[in-house]
Length: 82
Length: 476
Image 1 (cartoon, rainbow over the protein chains, first blue to last red):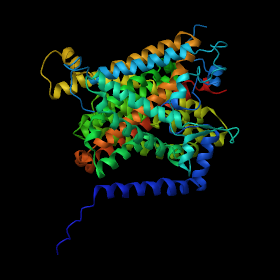
Image 2 (image 1 turned 135 degrees about the horizontal axis):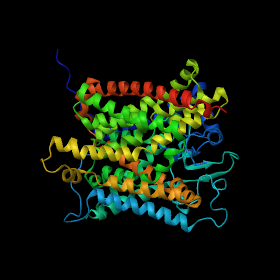
Image 3 (image 1 turned 45 degrees about the vertical axis):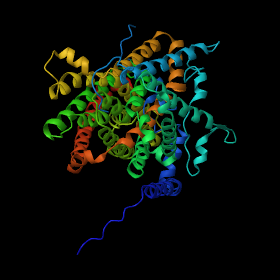
């Protein structure tokens, strides 16, 4: 048995196919996933706390994690000369 | 990221590293100067009045697509959280963000002695593709599960490169290495050494003791025990896993001249495991009955990406109605963020002095050979970091100037430079080169073993410092 010769797909058609798959994924599948209760709860929690999970470094966070107040009050670990 | 060693002024223009330093330093200096010029007249040193630093006029010249769930056009407006009827369009700042990248590409090309006109058409297309990648990353499910923009920028480039290929007219603009180097010099402004002490001794112990041990241990494991042929792949995987994910991978990848394919693979691994750890670790900590503060420090020391650390800390604190896990997690991760410059410098020195020299270099003096091979743009990265760290500690006013310049301009610009840089890398990536290594599964095993070591050591150190040595200090 011989396998049939592969029919070359034109490059533009391949790009169009990839774009179509991407469009369905982003415009149909992801919005549907986003409506699932568990995912929706996670998104709501992040939004309500102004958390940006996609932050690459701390400067992209909504709130800079400055030295928390409770540490100022209770944690005397770094000698200040007092 | 492989580039020819050597630096200086060539017959026609500057070396790529020098061009990246000149442009990066100029942009940071411009941001600081404009921020200073627009300083507030009243209450300029009060952080409560300006929690994110002084507002900078440059913020109006750059932004990125906002999060959206089902209608991508919503990415072009900022909706007021208190009053959803108030919307602010950001189309112009997004287009201007693309224009910054085009301008930087043209200026870099000119500094290197070539004609900027040749890169302009390609630069415009690359900037638009960067915008598409940002738009894909801004979808809420993607955004809130930490699948960061470099992944989509690489994907956009890979799809185009592997379907229609790269047209000839686009090739002169494919300067991904230059964009990432310039982005790293700008990024230096965000790496503030002064933040290393934010959490005092326990935070330092959790970050500074565990991170180098895991970094070096994982690298040696990959090179000596698992016999992974590429040392740079081992280094990039070790750095993104032990330090802080994608940003550490970019910095160390550039420092050790990792291949584009290696950096892409390391980033993919990091993002995949970050999503899993962000979701799994908070319930595990609650289930195991680990102290919330210790758990927060453990999250900060182990989850790769900064945003995912804060998200996991929030999830951990949600049921406990306690903000401390998120605060400790974020601060431990911030300390690790601040280590990127030092680690990238150490990796660059090690690579120039030992790895590259041992592999191919002539047996000249170590210092001379190391300097010849040293990636000079790292000096620009360290330079902007040192200057901004110094300014940050000088006075309350200058700390607000630095925060405003970073938040309003340099971090956004760095994001665009990285994003378009990754589109270029995707267009040029050939995963066939990595096929034998990928098929062996060894990079995945290396990541898993290294992460297991990281999890064990971080938990031990967090328990020792936050849970025992300084427990009295962290218990209100």
